[in-house]
Length: 347
Ligand SMILES: [Zn+2]
Image (cartoon, rainbow, N blue to C red; front, side, top):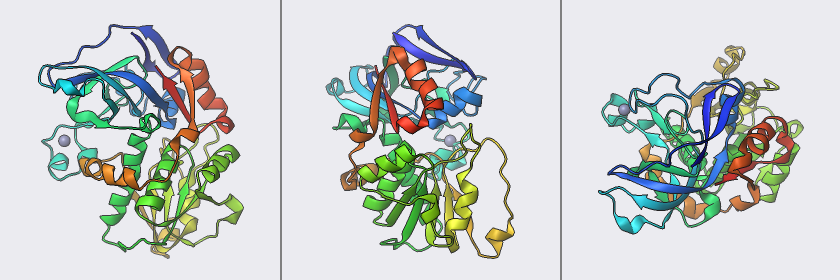
């Protein structure tokens, strides 16, 4: 089968490799949609940050690794312990795989597992291939094809809400002002969760005009940078992180936008230092909390959350063929940021 494999920074190859076979508790998925995320572009430009070079402690797998943690498709075959009626079903992959034994797993914080593995990112192959095998526990049935690459970002959005709730702060978020920085697939998914599921008063900002326009088309309220008032949001969520090219960072700006006593939730990726004056937090009791991927609790919440969402994700998708992924996917995502929100590889 055709697959993209990550060897190192600036070293990815399209290769013909053997089609995998499902082991007894696994399913074989014919991948139909696989999203190119900024996380993968960062790995390509100056990584590896997440992708492991050494054998993974849980799975034993090292590079080369098939990237992509946001994907799904149609189940084509199943292992001998798996219900055969699943064949033909459309499913998204739930990429998180954990040890189940460490203190974090035992306390419902699987996202912090000592042996954290993640399909397409850490210790396990992902979606940039014609086929993928995953444990039957790592699938989620999805009716709408356009949702396949958004299930993971939506789970990430649910985790930001869970992290906020765990602070034992104000649970009634109805009409509370929330600002999302970054209108990529993750920012828009987080925005949709906070607006439609949490029922907060959500605004979104991006430095890219194309993404602002797309967010508006989806019915999200946008604010240009000059329209954002300082000290005016209960919660700011940094879904932008640091741009590897411009090195602009959303987290520093975000601190100014939160109200006194408010929260900045950090989701975006940073691989370089940023600097700020800690007293800007202390004097105003502003808080920075962080949110990593998702835990199993969010998977249980997912059906209700999906029912609440009023966003047409299809309008964000631009498709490319797997055979063109390097030029039309990776290179384009690196240099033509004003032209897309979600590039999806169709395999
Ligand atoms: Zn664990």
